[in-house]
Image 1: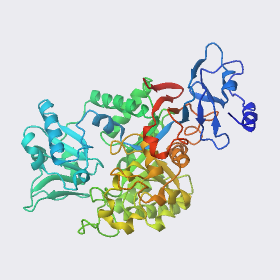
Image 2: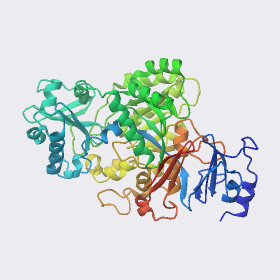
Image 3: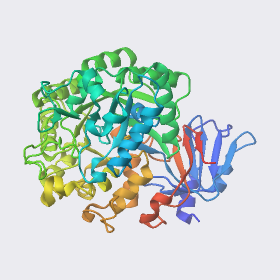
Image 4: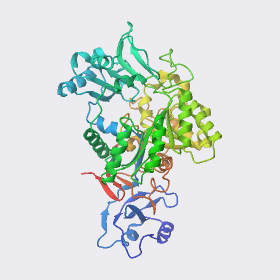
Length: 552
């Protein structure tokens, strides 16, 4: 029941629409967490023309309806603002849904068996890609082309580790790409070699580009099918908007998004980021086409400082514990990266940059600080994508600089099973520092990095609140001092992501005037035991006032 004070506040609701017109739809008899500090709880929502026109008690909202209003009884279900995912590779994820799945392969035998099965079914000449394997699941030994060559002599295989910073090529692909013992390591990457100097098939970061050049590009129809699969997957998990960090065929994909939006077939909102190296093209594109609308926006730029922890290419101040010959790498020359950040910022583009290692994050914070100090004051909202491993000093800089910590909590419960062997216990103290970042005044936003990790906000909330690692070794939480509350995790998936995308007040909150985006869940996240959060189901997803997913 709503309190008398809440009823009094609801009585003051003024619908900004035409007084004599009824809303298009109402959703009532619900347990609504609005995300609005002024009115945190409600029972019903009224929608007109894709926006929320009233939030209040079931009786009051039903009183706005007429015979033409669509009325949906939610039967006491728990409602939250639509989840926003701060970091996905949408088309890559959609295409990967149709590829071999190696994510849960826990032995060499299972790994090779699945690839052999995929090769047996593949039409002649079709590549086997993606895969999302994780060598830590079978003890840390990197796979080699010798594992898969016997089953794939005539099938090109190029399968990525789940972080996207390392891939395995079979011998056929190495031949197609012209990679042999004499091929030098490219800038920002490395070719792993055996004791005789021959490529093992493992290519890291920039070395993967040597193969990317010979992979046949997907057809328009394949991209369309990838988008269709990705949208269905997202809305079935309560996701109403994604910040798409690009990847495959970035500019073709933006045009695909525009065609899909123009036809009215987008099922979720998209904020599209293009490669930072293309800042000049993006500036011209923005000048010609604007920045989009409430369904589809562009003008974000994504850059890279370093690689990943799992691939030992994240950039640290000190060497890796289990690879003492390296401190990681920079994917782009730092001077060139700083010039790109500066130029994109001057062109009024929104800059987000990947940084994982502590040295990468320190460098990037310095770079953002330099840009902020050297130019006219404005609302930069610079973003560090991942911000995984931070020094104590770095944690304290996010708030004062206004830099967004754009993080993906599901990575924490995966990495927690093996990260200590990479960098040792001391450096782990600043790892996935959710609690410390919030306490320091930083904007903390959440997402998945799909297809690197599952596109599932409920998994992310569970990870941030419990920090229980996937290997079961940390039932009380890995680095438990960095746990946050359910309310804080929800805010990082909603209102904080809205702020990170310059949409505060429009999405990420359920209040009058906001867009009608929300997720309906089977249980109240505040009432369920945190360890049971993964059992909560999404039963309905509404975007722009339209049911984009309803569980059967």
